[in-house]
Image (cartoon, rainbow, N blue to C red):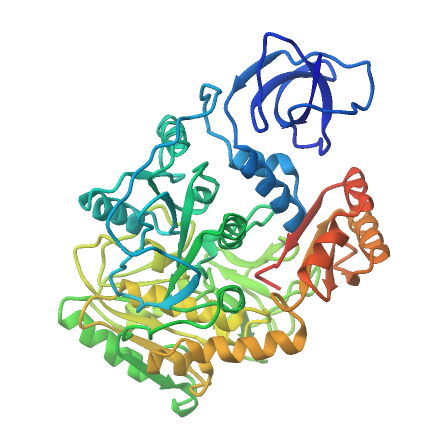
Amino acid sequence: MTVVRVQPDVPAIHRVFDYFLPSHLSVSVGTIVRVPLHGRRVRGWVMVADVANPETTELRDVLAVVGAGPPAAMVELCRWAAWRWAGPLATFLRAASPPNVVADGSAEVEQAVYPGPPLHGEQLELVGPRAALDVPVAPEGSTLVIDPSAARAARLVSQLEAQGREVVPLGSEHPDAVRTAHWDRARAGACVVIGGRAAVWAPVPDLRAVVVVDEGDEALEDERAPTWNARDVAFERARRVGAAVRVLTPAPTVDALVAVGEPVGRAGRWPPVEVIDQRDEEPGHGVLSASLADALRHTVDRGARAVCVLNRRGRARLLACRTCRELARCERCGATVEQRDAGFVCAHCGSARPSVCLHCHGSTFRAVRPGITRVRDDLAALLPRVEVASVDASSATVPDVPVLVGTEAVLHRATGASRSTGLVAYLELDQELLAPRARAAEQALWLLVRGARLLDDPGRLLLQTRLPDHEVVQAARRSDPMAVAGAERTRRQALGFPPFGGLAEVSGAPDAVAAACAAVAEAGATVLGPVADGSRALVRSPTVASLCDALAAPGVEAARTRGRLRIDVDPRRV
């Protein structure tokens, strides 16, 4: 009797099991089956279709074949991704499988040839933030187009279908039934698969080209652990089959430059950029400078909309007493408090109290770091008879008003209004430029890219900063994103940060973090920490491969039994 090896689809189980395959069932690598496990019937994926040396002769039978799963080549890609991002193999097999049942069996591969030059090699192309995309497609076989923007992906589908292409949209915005049907169609090949992060796992058998749009967009990276990045999966998949790679981006990251090479061409023109040097402003104005007020009035007077960006929620995140000038702090833990409509609230311990100074009992405070709620009120006073609204990630709707102020969420959500957007103003850009993160400059540039895309002609960007010579500011003014990439590359290489070294953040229960750190240290990695009461540590290694090998040590898996453990490889916020 044939023995198969199965990976159960159970989050807490990260190992494979051997089962007898009854003679009336037929499977291949990747087939989804139903098997008994600890008194339960669970689904799983066939990892080996004919095991030569089973672990034991006392095996149970496979109960049933559920349906088709990822083909063998995709199963191997899932193994690589589980190693690369230190995550459970089942997580990636699930991402590569159809949402609903698809009849098992190999699909008949289709053939189609379209006119056009063949695609070879790897190439990064700079495109302007508002430029129309000309997506290259292989003349034969299948092409994967990974685009984090669902709206732009839908336009690409229509554009390629008008050219006579067989297009398969595969995005998370579609219902499960539609995604299942499109996954099944992709198995036949000879198509163009377009979608977001999940489209990189499309089961096309004849991949000839991979196109990644906006490779630096954080939407291509899963926020949940394992924090895999669709860009890196796409590059690895193309490398394995020899497919061409094309990267289209207005702001290339260092990771893409190292993987693909120097860009060809130049980015299109950015919108006009006005820089307000806050060092020249009169003291006391805060983020509401005189130049900003003039720009807002001019934009509103011509019937356009203005969007102000400030990445601080609430009314105020840092306050000082006007009487004694002491900072407002929590009486319980000493942390600074935030101002809410009902009084002061400590973000650290959650305690609340009235708006009274602990030192002099004064009741008037000055907002040293105002949040968007406070700025909204100040803008409403600055612009009488003009409606102003605030927007953040928790806002249910985005009001169609002349002036919006919000966190960066406003750049994603402020679309479809009756007014065109004539101004995007960054009220405190230094908060992004000087953020204590290794990728701060890249992330700040992408914040400007999103603002530029929101603008209509003749819109403009307005940057308030005390660092007018910073490479991000100069890149926007000169329409030269390589200024940021060059400076970032030098810094990362000197510090040994990704992609010039391996870096991971380990967090969770202190006992689990300590055990995982001990395991990776024994495997040769460098551990920094733990800190924050033992719940967080950084792991470094000279190369990404050596880091992944250290995180794959058996002791790391055993550490998960001690409590919650999260591993973030290539963390964006460190």
